[in-house]
Image (cartoon, rainbow, N blue to C red; front, side, top):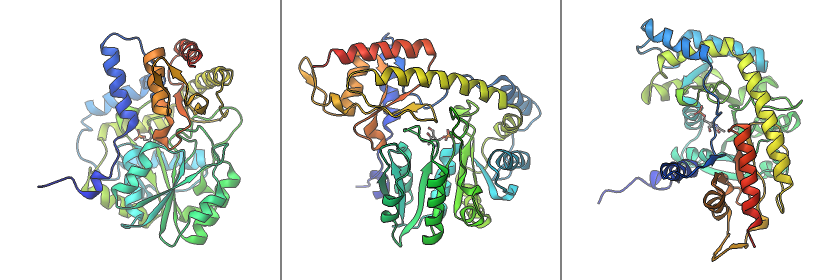
Length: 396
Ligand code: PLP
């Protein structure tokens, strides 16, 4: 009578991945679905990055390399962290992984003992809670403020002697919030005072609109640096989601632990992709700028449409490529025989009636909301918003 382990039977499958399956089925049946669910840029990986990968392969860069990555890519990352974030890491403090997702798993495993607590601000990304459970840790969810900024009072109350870390994400998926310097400074003080780590997921760093600035908590002070594991990656800024490359930058001892973990799991991330990342880090500021300009236009449009729809409340946030409107006004309303009870019903209704794919906020521990990604062309977003508005008018 062998069964799944306790740890694995405790894991919840990813709701975003399941939705992707439903959408694929509908498209296969010929239904014209507008996708506003994807957590990835709709743009193609820039040409120069593709060419750098081809060149690396042609040059035979296809073998095992150092577990934490080739020195060239770790130097390029160190340079980027100095230039963009004002923070100094040596290449031996950096470990390149198979996506920021692996980097996060490495970081959590490196600092969490079985039974230790990890604080997670919610709404938060689907995988954080599960990553903590995977290492035998205990996720402690703390609700953000209504503007989606960190609630430092609630976070302070959640700290116990078993707190190993807090997992933060700025700019944030799913809220789009960009954490203020003041709140991150206060968080760094708490981390030093109670001696826990800040695992700082900065994968949306480049996706910021208006005058807001990304704040890198590790750069604030020596103590903030000593208490932070910085996570970043190539997926979002360089449209490299399928390439699977991300990294950690950490105090030296932690970095050595991370290398040891990775040495027994995946070893080095794909060698020729690391060479492509060197090219991206050095030569793609302009493609990022162009993409951000386009996302900014789409966000303004989508936000403007949403807040004019009956009953919908939405924060106008400055980062990532998501909006997280509150749709609870529609709970209890009906279409024919069926009733909308929660964010899952709401998204099913929008998918089946409007043929627009969006993600239930419940997946992000925000049950009164839905996540709308503006990772589709302006034309499709206009059409998507028209369809959602028409469908909502039919609810009684
Ligand atoms: N962190 C957050 C907040 C994300 O939204 C994602 C991707 O959706 C990741 C990490 C993982 O990124 P990667 O593709 O580098 O594994």
